[in-house]
Amino acid sequence: MSIRHLGKYNLEQKESFLPNLLGVIMSVVTSSLSGDQEKKLLSLFGHVRLSLLYKASVQGYTAAAFHARCNSQGPTLVAAYNKAGFLFGAYTSKDYTQNGQPINDDKAFLYSINDERKNPLRVSSANGQYGFTDENTGPNFGALVFLFNDTATVQYNAGNSYNFEAAHMHGDDLQLTECEVYRVEELGGCLTKTWRNMQWTSERKRQLKEKIKNYKPDVKSVSQARVLLVGPVGAGKSSFFNSVNSIFRGNMTSQAICGSAGTSLTTQFRTFTIKSGKSGEPIPLILCDTMGLEEASGAGLDMEDIVNIYKGHVQDRYQFNPMTPLSEDVPGYRKHVSLKDQIHCVVYVVDACRVSLMSAKIVEKFAAIRKKTNQIGIPQLVLMTKVDEACPLVSEDLQNVYMSHYIQRKIQELSASLGIPVSGILPVKNYSQELELNQNTDILILSALDQMLNYADSFFENQPEEEKEEL
Image (cartoon, rainbow, N blue to C red; front, side):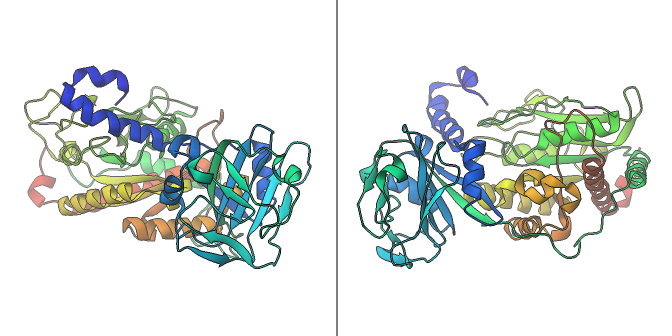
């Protein structure tokens, strides 16, 4: 739902909807790090990934905003930017908890990066033990206190805990143009043995494609399995459909709208049929796309709409209205449904880069959907997208996906968070900027589709015999 749609609602609805909409827009933040800055920052560590937690220009130059997003996040890095062209800040391996005490951390350090220096400046504490003071202020590393007095400034206290020349650290410019905090996650290396067997050959790709094209539901009344994709805004639902469509067409396609935005780009319920080749027959699988889940109440996909989708009442191209769930008297409602109209498998789509950063509200929405889905009896899987962006080892070679410590850890974390067994979590890479198909990418996606059809079979097996025989 975009701002231009507000005219459709009365004043009371506008007043309740606008703060929610702005809250969602504000929640989507991107890093200010240049490629060179990120490379230099990463050189200060081993094999790590930086995940943005807090951005002051979006969430406020206040200690409260900082602590709300950065407390109890484990190792973190402060990144402060000034007009003098310096990127400087601090790292701690300890949690922020606001306990009012000095925190010992022999791994803590201050750093500075600018274009004139080839390598970053790195400064450990004078006694080798002090890390920071865990107060209810901005990050307080003694010599540098960020977000001083809830402003876009840094307080410099010469000779306090860390020793350095001010001109070398920040160019004597303590006014900030931006302040960010990143979570620092150890990636680990490659496992000695793959933890999930996968064949990466052209023959395996051919076998998977043929198996999917020749799939037949064990129910006379159903010719195509219907799989619903559900997930947060930007997780990659629409990109997954485009990737599947590209594989079966044999060239890149972009039928479903996808991109990056604060609110869901998908505002309709869509049922996508996939053809084998440009003018070939449809494969026996329909992928259903929905609005993304959003944090704000009254935004994104509504629970009542989800249930109506499950039961087959929502017609293709129905325009979602987060404030008014679909009802029988609304155009787009299918009154008479059969097994072929229902959803046969639900797939939750989650960005691998956001697994540790999913908000409590999104996790709660997933839990509510899981509970309702279990009650209705629909099998569920998880598609963990963007594995190449989450792990450099996988980016280098997609065949490392089941050898990566980090990806294995993210899958285990996602399993615990969503209550889905590890066996039901499928890592994939969607096509996003490629111009040509890639065999490894295709095999991961086709393997995921194969599992979806297996789970749909479980749904059909659980149906009463009389429904299976319907024609």
